[in-house]
Image (cartoon, rainbow, N blue to C red; front, side, top):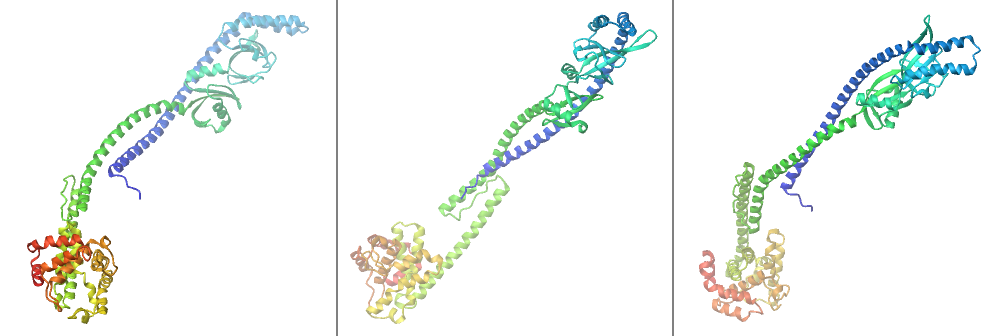
Length: 553
């Protein structure tokens, strides 16, 4: 059977589990609240970034347009372009001369490109094809290739995209001969510049293709794939992102985005550190508090338990438990226990009195069948108690012997009166009837469970140490000590009592006869005990038993 835990352990466990559950709930609520606040903060930040980007881009476009307008009016570039188109308008210009004229325009364009801060300065013809390009990214602008222009964005046949500012080129008579374009590549450098400005991640997409990014490739691809289903909050690569479109022109899209997990990690870590300190303090206080509470509860209960265990071991059921003064409930329990034990003690005393009275009545009824044996059972009981106490037996064993001796001849109820009351010696067959009374008495009493401790006395009080007794012929220590005691007491009373067939033999004669047969018919220790106890027994015997003993001595 599993041993239940102590109350102090259960109290401590319940308190710590409660604190753990409460801290877990606080942690969950804190985490959710932190993420919600981070979402709101990141969304606001991206909204502000979009406004700043729009303002910065408008200012940049304005500055570049002013600069391009001035460049388009530069006399040398206009002269070089005018010369080229004038010569080419007459037709029949040899290729080497056409190349020389183009180189003149290129030199002028290169001079202008070095004076400005841009990836490319390109000249488009009237058909929107690249005439010449200069700058670090001019290789992406091959001569003769068409350029798709969208709102401040140019998309080249090679799949590159540029942010552009354009200004028309007009010669004399306001004749348009092309467009001067200032272009910035939408590449990783541009994405990083925007990321630094926004304080967030940047993804630049051309249709369903990622041109540049400052976030993971998986997140960028997931963002582009989401397309029209993209919302302000989106799961990308198992991470939640706040997303804000910064720019859209034709197939080109620029997004700023911020990882909620990354943004929340710092505040969450700080919150967890604070919560950890609170948790340690809470556990410490909970442990101390629960230990104090458990001890306040368990100490009085332990005291009551020890007192009850001591009472039970000593069989001191009349002892009262003292109130502890720790709580009304514990004191109420002690009072209720005292009342219960008092009631049980009274009930046990009443039951015992009724029990002893019934046994005495049985013995008296048996003795009443023969006037010569009147009081025999009472006297045998008194002698047996003397022997048992002289042998220093426990008081509980003495009580068993006292009542067992009263019942030792109960089996004679089944013996016929003509045999039991016969005035002369018994015949062999009559004696056989008498020898059956121990077994018959045991069979009668066996039907009553509370008389079980007395059955060995009733059944075996005629057994002898030499094995010549009945009903089983037991020897020496095989015979229970209680039965040996009653056997000696029975013989003593029989010899000192008057019978129909003989007078009393006297106490001295009886004691000498017991000593003579000690070891064979009677137990030596019991004989020695009655010989020692009987001369001083009278003051110790109850008055009514003294009277009974006086009749037979």
